[in-house]
Every structure is written in C-alpha cells, then in structure tokens.
Length: 332
Ligand SMILES: Cc1cc2nc3c(=O)[nH]c(=O)nc-3n(C[C@H](O)[C@H](O)[C@H](O)COP(=O)(O)O)c2cc1C
Image (tube, rainbow, N blue to C red; front, side, top):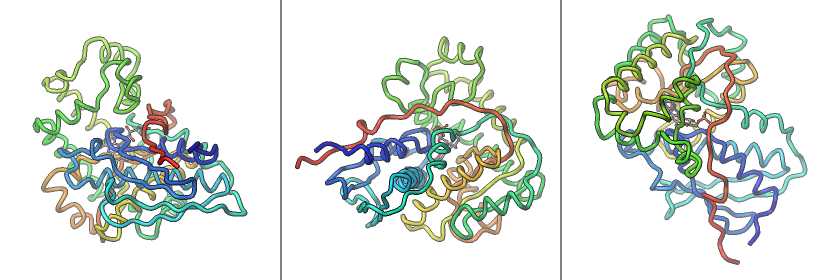
C-alpha cells in the first residue's frame, strides 16, 4: 500500500515533535489511510530516568498534536482511542476522516521552527496579557507560571539544580544519557536521533572540542559533570520563571494530553518571542518528584517543568528520523 501524499505530509510534521533525549519513541502502523495505530517503541523508552514512561507518553502526545495540526491544515481530522498503556500490543486507534474545511498552515511553520532553547533567556518577567494568551492556548487549568524571583520560582530553580546534582552521581542515568548524546557527526547522520552539540546550542569552538575530543566516556568525567552543572545553574538563573504543565490525573490519556498542551504552548510562545526549555530532572528525582505538586500547590499531576522567558536566539531544528523509519505498512 502506498502512503497518500497528505498522510505522508502529516506524518512528516508529526516526526518534528520534541521528545525526551530526542528518542522519538513513536511507531505508526498503517492499516489503511483512514486507520492508523500509534504506539510507543519499547526500545526507545528511558527506563533509568523515566521508569513509568511518563515522559515518553508526553512525547507521544507531542507527536499526536503535531500530526493533528498537519491533518487540519490538509483538510482531515482524527479521532484517537486510547485503550491503556500504548505499546505495540495495545496501540492507540487513530481514525481519520476528511473534513470540508482546512485550517491555515501557520502552525505548521511553527512546528518547523520550534526548537528547545538551552541558551540563557532574558530575565524580564512575562506580562499579564502574555500569560493570559499562553494560559488560553492550552487545556483549562493545565498551564502554571512561577516568576523566577518569587518563593516558588526560587524553589523550582533550587530543586532543578539539586536534582541535576543527583543525576550526575547516578551511573545508570549517566549511561542512559551517554547513549543518546551524539559525539560523532557520522552517528548523528546515520541514526537521526539523540542530542548533538548543535542542539545543545554550543558555539563553534565548543562544537570542535565536542566532536574532536569527546566520547561516551567523557560523560563520566568530573569536568563534564561540573561543566554541565554550571550550565544548569546559568540556565535557571537566566529566565523569566518556570512553567509547569499538569494533567488532570495520572491516566495515560491525561499524560498524553499534557504533551499535546506542550505543543500548543510552544506554538503560542513562538508568537510572543518566548522560548521554552523542559528541565525534567526535577520530575525524575526524589524528594522532588513526590513533593513538587504539593510544594507548588498544584492540583493534578505534573507532566512537564519548563524554563520560560524571552529570547531572540534562533537555532536550526534538531535531527529527526523520517516517517519511513517509524512507519510500518500492513500488506493489503
Ligand atoms: C517530555 C520531554 C522531556 C524533556 N526533557 C528535557 C530535559 O530534561 N532537558 C533538556 O535539555 N531538554 C529536554 N527536552 C527537550 C528534548 O531534549 C528535545 O525536544 C529534543 O532533543 C529535540 O530537540 P528540539 O526540541 O530542539 O527539536 C524534553 C522534551 C520532552 C518532550
């Protein structure tokens, strides 16, 4: 079965979705152009840092939202039926229908432009009008903002640094990270996943050092850990504050929904010149993972913690696998 152009195009935009460690943990099975199955690829989960696969579910939600935006621009719409943990034995049913309207394709330009900005942001605070527009861009009650200099903002900054310190002492998590860092341009080109020096926002000289002298082993060196921690401190001290995306509950649908909200927030932020940077370690390390929602007085389940602020820094989108790499076509 050939993939119709409109479906290939929607899958291409979906492939541009962000994901933790850029694992791109999605698989798509095409039963027919009107019926697809979406699932998580078990070989692309992060068992050390994300044992419940919560972040992979958020990533899958990002994939679905990008797919949905592309479908709308092409005159189609999808219905998603989530039956449980969406692995290959229990995939999400995706039923696609043609509609008689198309949405403008501005959001697709946003999906192409959006990247994770790890550079320092301006510290200027976000005004009420901007916060209103970000709040309205996502599902009701899922966006929360904490200014950097408020008590709760300072608490988040501190918790992120402490959580990172813990992770840099945890060999299993470091091995997992090292496996998804790309220290050779050839490996990055062949695999089209993981994190490159360019995606980290490194300058020309640092990139030369990264590709010329670094390897997986470097991740375990004290200088790498210290430099990485210094970078985290620079990042949390240079932003307007922190955004938290919550889901209603811990159901799979709710966590996937938070991923969809992340893309909505990302597109709305782009329009306002605002940059986003997920900092998930605080959701991965105790005591923060258990106590963060209470400390911040948030109802529901925390699905993503982000640094947020104005930035005019522009970077090329990170590497992605093409649809051919994650699509399986059923024989007709
Ligand atoms: C659920 C999720 C968790 C993430 N956690 C982190 C994180 O802790 N630190 C970080 O620097 N980037 C994080 N990211 C950003 C990804 O690394 C990034 O999306 C991916 O490498 C692709 O790069 P791009 O967004 O620039 O295209 C996360 C993204 C998602 C969707």
